[in-house]
Length: 319
Image: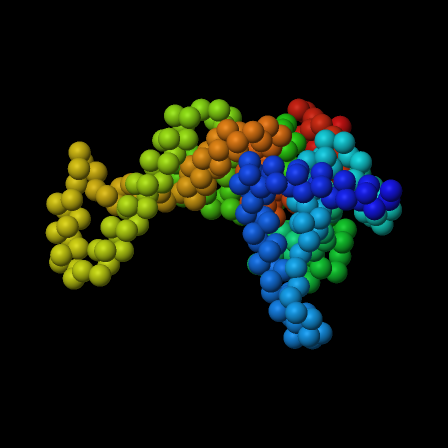
């Protein structure tokens, strides 16, 4: 009886996995990635143990996909969040909260986000501390950020307050906190495009076929501009000038269709993804899921530990 029950559960799990593989492109890509990882690990196991072949089981794949989807549950219910950070840093966040006015739950959420893979990537790119901060942001050395948790948390709280000055949407503020360097780069590129607003707009357009069509057209023109640019680079300088001057169409050259703002380029890609996911039957994703996977996982982790705190319109630091 127990064996039959296990077989039934396996059968149901495989059916649900099959449905997701057919309908959700993101899950399909994820499984492919895991299969590649499994192939690599299989080769290692073969070399060490001599076992012929190593395969990842359907149940293992499903467990990975399911655990990825739990980030949404973590934010919405708060159930999966851990109490480890609260137990370890409760005294620290209380002191920093008293000094800065930033809600303790926000500080705990930032600490939780600082324990993710994305945060480790930031540390490899010049950031430091339990919550990755750049020394120039904090006004102290990287060594101080690494060794003085209170100074690091004070600096992070200040950065958070500056981002929250003009808005009360917690998800947006947390997202911009973690993506602030990329946001600044996009802002400097001009065109009033930033990644967080781009993700929101793309999500809002998830039911609009015409927006998806325009995004695809813009990406095609962008690729054409890149191809034209590559072709010009292989020509003598004089011919490059001549072709550039005489290739205008209605006052524009092919190069004018190149998308120079990375956030605008992201917007077009996210618009297509949002429309296709919605069209395929995925009704549960949010604009946060359109952001890079590592980034969205970190944002969800932070939000889960913030436990639904609302930003105050007066202090912008939580209430």
